[in-house]
Image 1: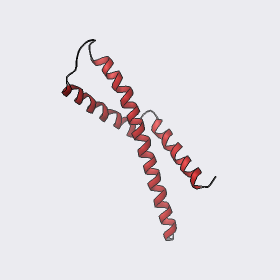
Image 2: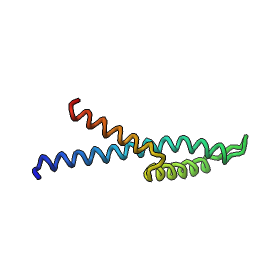
Image 3: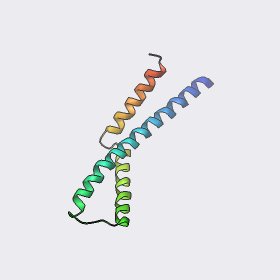
Image 4: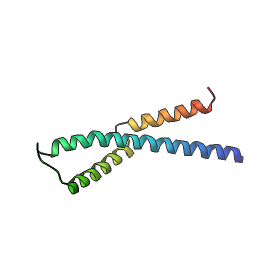
Length: 96
């Protein structure tokens, strides 16, 4: 293996890692938005006001849950986005 081949492989690995991270982060944000609203709907009584501290803890918990779900393949949206990003990068780099 020459230096150019090693450099190209490292670039591909970095691009793939960035695509995987972007897909997981997007899915986590989407899940956080969806599950956050569901959690609010089912955990609060109508007309009740939640204090700031409880709201913060609920937000942190929901973020941890959805990030974990997204890292563990989630609902498949992260993988779909990752594949689309990699296909776009391959298409762009091939000069097509």
